[in-house]
Length: 560
Picture (cartoon, rainbow, N blue to C red):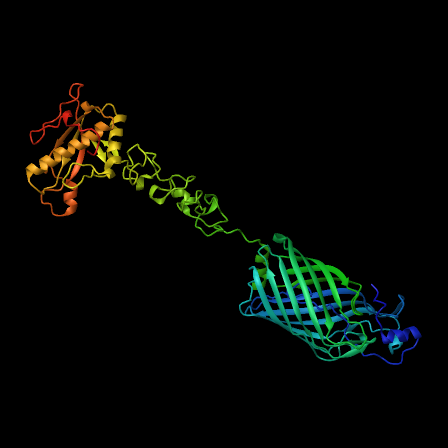
């Protein structure tokens, strides 16, 4: 790939005119600077230093085409191949210390390179073919908290430093002629699948040079790399790298140089400790020193049975899935939800609540119907279908609607009684029924009408212990008769009713009359179903005061 004709280079303008009056300062054109650890991505580093006391040694061979070619301004014609091609060998070695530090050395050798006659740039003849390059010393230190174990996934980071010594031949474009420095930062992330992504950034501190109208000197460096396992168990991966730099300064009216290269390759981690990598790529065409083509190969050796060799072997083994991936202590086929932590009681699955009633399904006797914890997740029962659930219904067994309070009807059958929800209230010391008790007595009549098998009901009236026996017997007799008359007026046949007053003779709380509540409980009306005698209604029982209420006592309208 030829350089852009738009580069306004002072020297190339001179070439176009056929003359050059000065010799430009020469510099190291080699942008391919490999790294020596077996898992480094050729020219892009990864963060992990070599394992403690592990060593590596290797050789990188690369061939570049047109690493430095000048093009006359305003034309597409090739003006001068300053370095038309280069074959270079880098011999490298590294050692790891304490799992935190790695130090290395790289000795580049230009095995062969070619050029045109360089008379146009001030030197008669051709470039020297076989020359040494600048010796490089490297160091890598893991950042605390970001040191990644060899086979573990996760984020890693390290600081790097390089020192270039002027051992090469500057006239052959293989040296900068002075000491150079390359501080940098490496960050990467290794996924569980073995994929590695790496980012490098740093500085290349080098002497200022001007060549072909371009200023070369201090530069910012960058690198992006990736490694993707292809056959991980065999140690075969693919690697890709984008690396380059850009000078921090430039001459007025000159074009910004960005010597960058994209390289792709294949790698094989051999069990003998050898790592082979081959690949190639090319430059972006946006700098004088970006080659149009580069191919490379390398071999890096790690002695067997060292910590680094063991780490590479572990990397080749895909991680086995955990026995209990969700950590719920339910393993193997017994875990019905292997990716979600659950309970042993649920076969390794988390508790669910289908009906959203806060009772989990494994404890819910009605998992699809919302209920309450009191009934094991089932809806509250309503035996009598009165719309009031049993736990709030004082009369849950009574098959009637909520005509009274708390789910109870005003009157209902129970055993040999017609029970009423509240007492029948009378005017004080009288047998006049108060209107507030009419609904109760109406419901008593309704119960009798709905249950024709009830042949006779005794209406009993009771008083408290105040006043004399004679007074209480008389008052209770008259009150029982008033209630019976109310029922007669409500449609109950006279032969189905009797009444009797018992005065204070049958208290339900004792005779002490200790408080108003006890006295109120003793003042009551009861409805007792009389047993059938040979299929016929029984006779009315005798009145305790030897005076039995008879139908002649019926006075007409209730409450009179």
